[in-house]
Length: 387
Image (cartoon, rainbow, N blue to C red; front, side):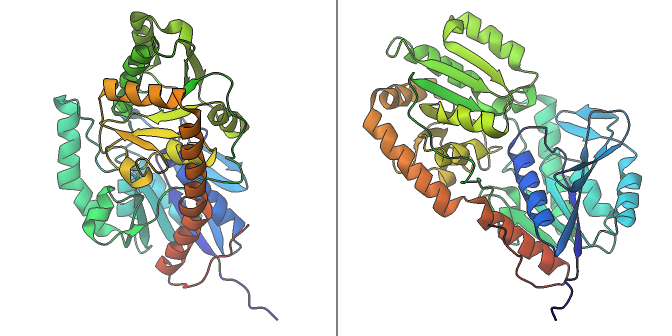
């Protein structure tokens, strides 16, 4: 007779969670799904919402608690009640291990400090929070990274880095557990009929380091060489009006398509309909680049900036192309070459698909995460993979 499995209850604390769109959101969602699928774990997600009152739902079988913020400081939701609420939630759900996610300051920091006797596994998703634009916001973020973040790291029992440029990696204590992609969902499709440049990601004022404005300038430069090219922008945020203004100023509005935030099958189809997928990030805030591996899994060639964790993900000339960050002329030149060269696009796309299967499949990452959480709880075991 099989022995009963002792359940490890995990409090997954993350500043944002689906339906919010982004790499951190997809990472935490995949961890929650993996925890729910393994009978040795139970998960409760504690995140932030947009309502004035805390809301509790069950999503994909997982309890999700969305805390009500008082206000947002830059991109960080904040509430003075959260230390009290987090203590109560950890006690009410009998949490054994806290799995906190950053870099967005405050919520993960509070969870680390109020965890009490519970072990904390902290996963860090960024190289630096500094936006690279100067001013008081960057000053505050530099101060936070120098004065607060090392103390938060020191309090965590286990640290996880999502890439070799994530701040936790530099501590020498962190396990490297990168994001991944569901290679059974993100699959190649037929070649697109129209030369299409695709961007997938946030378009918020606080995320201008994503470099969408550089992509717009590059696309305007390439249109004379490839006049039937289209630029498709997938994502949303409060910077869209300013980006639309830039599109009109550049005179490229007829060639630009705004799709808004997409998920599920619609997102997969967007990748499949792209000829080239671009991530033009400008700073080390881009510690990985989830859109890159999703595009690779769909067999699409990728172009990324040589900054942050992107060169760790994209092997230049092997399964993608790297360009200097902020260099619109270099980006335009690479895009023209790729849009004109069917054979090169096909070769890079095939190599990207192989890399997605061998290096970036989610099963590798979630198995490692569940193993770390089990060890942190003092129960060394092999998680049961759901294939």
